[in-house]
Length: 206
Image 1 (tube, one colour):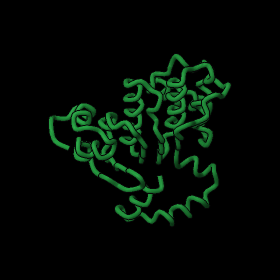
Image 2 (image 1 turned 90 degrees about the vertical axis):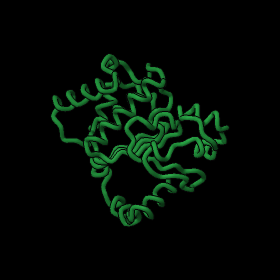
Image 3 (image 1 turned 120 degrees about the vertical axis):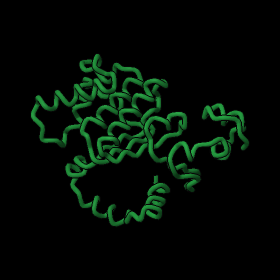
Image 4 (image 1 turned 180 degrees about the horizontal axis):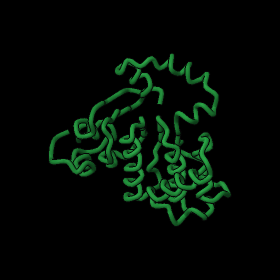
């Protein structure tokens, strides 16, 4: 999101344009080693097995076949997909395919992971499990940036939330500090009671 990039540039003192130019000079293979990206609508109809799709996330890594197999198996286990390894991606449900694409994004253990709505199409338990996997990736030292609309998922290990509306920053800080009924009333046009129910917050005014 361009608004978020401009904001980080201003607040954190990042020279985004300089870094953008440096990144543009990288070959696709070099960039693939540095970052992983999960778009909001990834291709989901490939006639490939789940194991093969997840292994595509390692295409830039010079790994032996055994190491690839082990990495893929560990990632499938982490996302509760062990029983899907031999099934074709285009035979799965939408939520199952979304989890497979997240596994393909995380398998490479990149320094930067960008995910646009990684919980879309998942049931509540699967959504929290997916975001917990991203939290573990961040705990391992990666920079993980996630775009979300569902604020109820923001207790899943996020340490910073930037709330955007129409290109403007409404709030920035830890989830417990940023997310309150007043903000949700402004952001989503909710009533005070609706906002409190959404957050599970104590009664308060908007």
